[in-house]
Picture 1 (cartoon, one colour):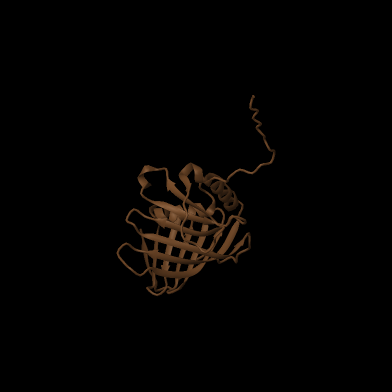
Picture 2 (cartoon, one colour; picture 1 turned 135 degrees about the horizontal axis):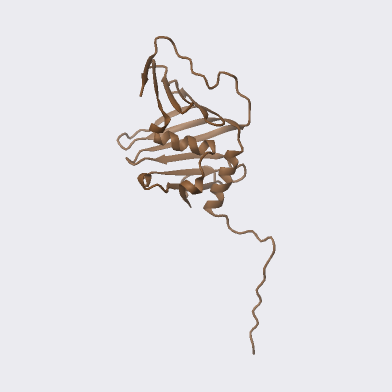
Length: 210
């Protein structure tokens, strides 16, 4: 008796989503924003300190390259990115430091990602990488730089599988330090006041330019 094998091709059948699919969808979403605003919580885990530094604030972004990180707790600080200059203002220390953004490689990576300027698949090797979370249906991917000079660093991203907004960014540097940023109350394509991306400091502020 001859055995007959039937192969069925079903139109519209959904295939498993790859890590690259998630990265492309995220990139498309980020590039669709002209502006956004969000609350954030940041945890910095040092390889030499047992208790992480926990900070809170708001972040504001406007295309093409304007970004303001406004820290409220435990102390007031402002990180302003404007005209490829990074402004670091600490109110308590009465200190303003200014330097070229290209010298702050960690900040450049996170900022380029959030602004949608970076081609994720061109810049990173992408794979799924689960880590502990309260968002059980979120997509979690790992981005490892293709540039061999930065191969010992990587990013973990947690992305909402419906809105494709970033819940969390976790970065690891070459020394084993970890920075974890959680986003909430996300608002996109909103109008900002004229002074949002200006920085005015008291006249007695010490200014250091690198």
